[in-house]
Image (cartoon, rainbow, N blue to C red; front, side, top):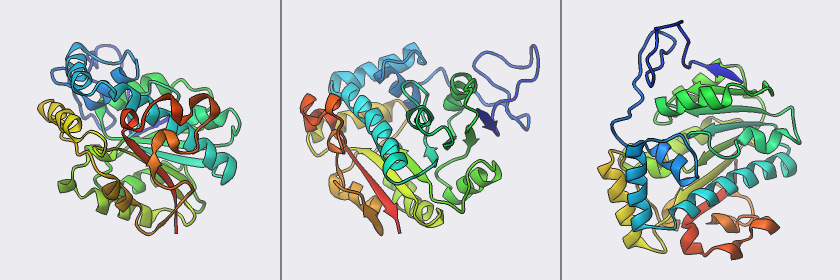
Length: 291
């Protein structure tokens, strides 16, 4: 795996545990004194890349909404199904995942490269926690067709410019772009609709957007408590209704079955929607083609 604009090893004694040295000699601290949304998600998925402070906050989320672990698993399963669909049914051979998160379960490239080894995947994140653990967990891939790009979704033009500079994806051909689980971490005051619209407008024609989003539709009281826990942990979140999530797809063509609870989006026999309720999943998801 290529690492674009990420941690650069400087030799013995140059880097303290938890504080990688970045290209350009900028030191970035991996905050271990406050909860991290990425590490909390890792904990929900049963990962080991988390600290006591993350587990305390995550356990509080579990207390107010016990199904949050199901939400995380449903989200991961949708990611895998959606990229396999795009590879099999739409012939997509390059993918861009924005808001990668800590690699805990099956990675996007693993989901498609076993059948389509020619696929190229670029992972984008701005979180130094993700950067550090992405370097460790993904950097050893023997496939050689994945890259990590450090960029911030809050500036979609700069993000895509960074991806272009990596020369890893071909912007003359359609691609699949994943925003799974990212948008709840962009409250309305950060203009998430503008960000998605700008991003979509800059992608190659015929590209696809996959998106999943927490919803309060089934248990608004519990999700208000979840949002409060995240806010107290220093990570504001916004949990949206179906109407609010659907708005992200304005001007795009939704792939059947449209915007649905994630476990109902083209379920596979072994993980069909009957296993858990819609309220437990509490996650809308869709795939759309950008006009």
